[in-house]
Image 1 (tube, rainbow, N blue to C red):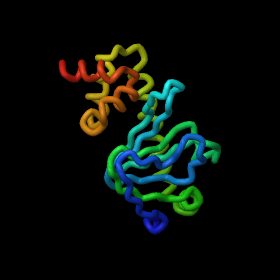
Image 2: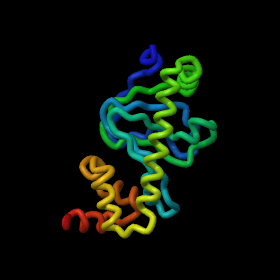
Image 3: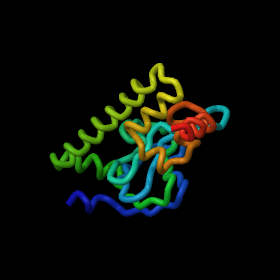
Image 4: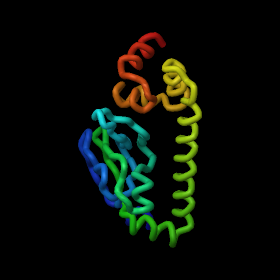
Length: 168
């Protein structure tokens, strides 16, 4: 039943699913590939905020919930196979299917925990400690995401990340 509300979507590498200032109308489940949420600084540099891989959901949640323009981009960074559900259908399932409402609660809780670990994990950390934190908590990022994107995620330069990785 739940699956019937999702539509398959195949994307290319680096495809933008949501532009900055667009209102988010879709929630994505990743069957294959990776989605990242990011913003861009005034200087034109990307700042990655979140990565989602196979078996996870991704969206620009604040915009999806309040239907105001997103302050971030949503992008596939690999050729991806997604399942997407409209906001209307998503909330219909939340309201009518307790099992789906439970999944939504788990998504929110997991997202909160990851965000908190990242915030607390990086407070007062030097670059080496940040990379060690990634190795411990999110090692898949170092294997599947470019140094430039990983560096923007942990707040260091790509050259510093490369130098640290070569020493570990």
